[in-house]
Picture: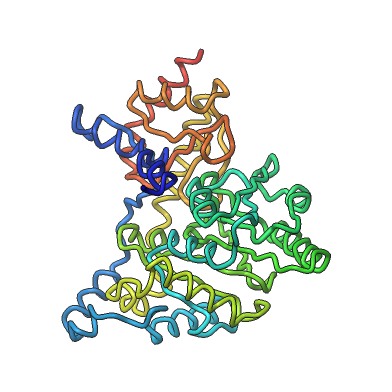
Length: 393
């Protein structure tokens, strides 16, 4: 016998990956320059120079045994210490190395955290729209996803979230800047959420964890900052990845941070370590761990993403598209002219435009466009976007 649920997951890729694979096939058929692929959040902006310099220095000067050998299960202590110092400096926090667990990117961080915090039959609240893999991560361990729509401006609807909180609520996942909308939740919105969760913890006599999924934290525009959730709510777990900030998506390096003021901190951290052990997520890639202290604070050129963002907003608006103005990340949420996500994205394929239907994001009627591509590709795609909109007239 096999695990039928796992077979189903393996038989059908995520809608994003399916479109990405379709794009590769189509590029082979008609040439990559003729396909406008906005399917995958795969950064085209080069990694900062410090990344290549740091890797070169490590390979030249470090013992291969130390560089490629096992670290502690939760990650190298000096690396975790350096990250903790950086967080304390930039966020005025008081974390230490033993608050951190190094992971194979944000996906592993989320899977570990949800395994550690949510028991079978409990619920995890997810504001919609959301990254579709949350559902997979939540349900893998027997918990249930509870979707709560954001408000019309794609900010958190705190009243709706409060109505969804009950005696089975284990956690809520907050993703800001958001995938797929690019929305950044405002400080007053975050404060209102955290104040409500504190009230509900007292009312229900149970801990409700706030899981902050933050791979896009540094990718913000127009001088915005992203609130650091541990400052507002003690029972916070931060899941972070360097994939987007350093343009290293294929290297898969990140961490789980347990807020040091979390109720029963020791048990929570031990549960994170235990979940990492049970899932086989011990000793994140050693070479990438050792690189991190050399590149903390480095960020890929966000100005390129901003240029792409402005270009698309200006031109698509001229063509008649309704869009959600993104304040962060590198996604544009476009309203389907027909109101049907799947119809819109299938019609876009006829113009060789690959965009992701929003149904699996929990918000029908839109499509996600990843603008982390070269600006020239967007410029080449603009006539196709105009023709696509004209096809609805």
